Image (cartoon, rainbow, N blue to C red; front, top):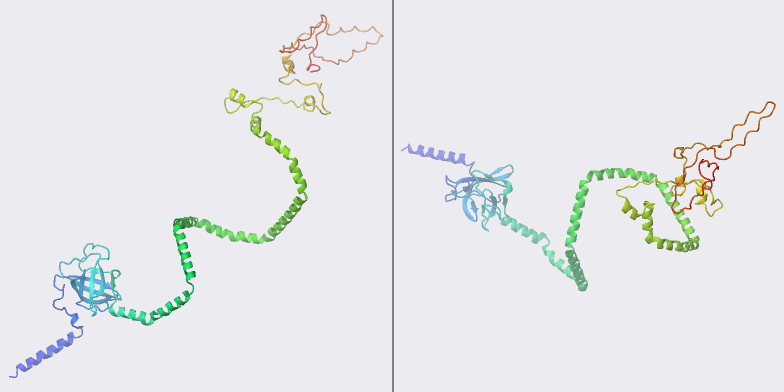
Length: 437
């Protein structure tokens, strides 16, 4: 009868030790898998989600997809200063790869649940692999009832909601008696807003133009930087030259005053001169229609435009001109009517003159004839002894070249040449220009 007592005692002591040893890890009934929890079988799929605030979420809380319970929360932990929630879903449940997690309140009594759904407005994509973790950026927590009531109490009690009546009263007092002004202000605001709306395209174009200008400035940033670096030295130079610039401006003012006095003093003479120039300007204006033709002819003098169109083919032409500026020619032409004029001046024939073909200085073109008989007197005999020699003949004053000029060419319309010299008359000697020509 004594043996059963020690057995019962040993059983009681072992039970106390077991309860004592397991009491350190026991966290309440929710830390144990409750019977009937969804997604707690051996075939359930386990996932993790990182959440910054789990609120009052507890283990065994439901996991919902599209407001349907598909699993339950297994455990809660802490990792890198945020909560790590481990949950499992029942077999056959497909968790989308783009799923996001959120903790919400199931009822007003304070029960919480974990919702796993795709982002709002996006369809589910793929399947989240088993053991995967939904990152912290894809999780959130809805406000709890306590947070909502606390925020409402802050607004009602300390948020100035009681002062709304005072604000409305003061606003009504400010508008009292100024209804016309307020109505006019609203009308002007309506006009202003309508004008802005009508100029919306111009405003948008201006903003785009400013954007292009800013883009241009951004592309020229280095040039602008160099310019800004060089402007201060240039300003320093201007500052150093400021006295000279001031003096120059003062001198310019003095010159302006002098010019003003001069114009005022000579106003009558200036007006008279302008009136006297009126006939000259009028004549020049009258010549204006023909001035273009004159200028055109001056470019290709002495050829006319019609001659160039008919005779010249190409972009250039040759011109040979002989300009006679000898004194006899000037006296006979340019100086006529002055005291230096001389109508009978001996002229050298120029190309175009009738005598030009009969005039030359080139001996190769004059021809050579033997002197006629008796052109030279016989040599005197020697004087007898004792007599003085005869005096020498006088010096020749006329031409001495024994050359006869070529026969003149007949000139159409010119008078017939003089009659031939009488027989026995010596032929004239040609030595240059004829007299009187």
